[in-house]
Amino acid sequence: MAVIVGASVHAPSAWAYDDIVLPSVAFSALAVQQEGAAETRETIHYADGKLRIDRGNGFSSTILDLTTQTQCLLMVNHTYLITPMDDELYRRYFARSLNATDARKLGTQTIEGQATTKYAFGDDGALKAAGSYWLTKTGVMIRREYDAGVYGRNVHYLELMTHLVFQAQPKALFMIPAGYKLAK
Image (cartoon, rainbow, N blue to C red; front, side):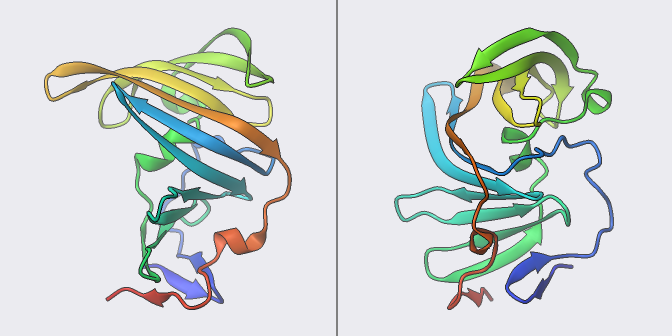
C-alpha cells in the first residue's frame, strides 16, 4: 500500500526491480512511441530512480518511482491516484539487465548524438516481444524496436528518445503538486 510522505510518493518495498538498468544521469527528452501506424509523443524527465511522463494537450501525467515500485497518476481535474507500478509501462523507457533478458551485444551505433551499444533481446514481458534496444554507457535506453503478436497479427513497435538534455531535474517534477487531492 502506498503512502504519501510530504508531497512525494513512497511505498513499502515488498519486491524489487533489481533487473532494471537505471540511468546514472538525470535527463529530459521527448519520448516517441510508434505502434504500427499510430504514434504518441511524451515529454519525460528522469532523476534518481523516478520518471515523470507528461502527455501534454490536457492529458494526465504519470510519475513512476522505480525505487518503491509505485506510480502516481496526476489527472487534469487536479486529483491523483497512487497505485503499484505498471509492469509494462516502465519497459518503454528502461532496459532490463542482460541476465534478466538473455540479451546479447550486437555492436555499437551513434543515435541522437549519443554513443550506444545495441543489444538483441527475446521474449521480454507478457507479449513475448523480441527485438533490439540501444543503451548508453550511462544506462539511458535511447531506442527500443521490436515485433509482437497482437490480436493474431504481428505489430512493429519503435520507442525512441529525441531532444535529450542531460541536466539536473527540478525535484518538484517528482512530487504531487500543491492543490491536488487524492481521488476517491
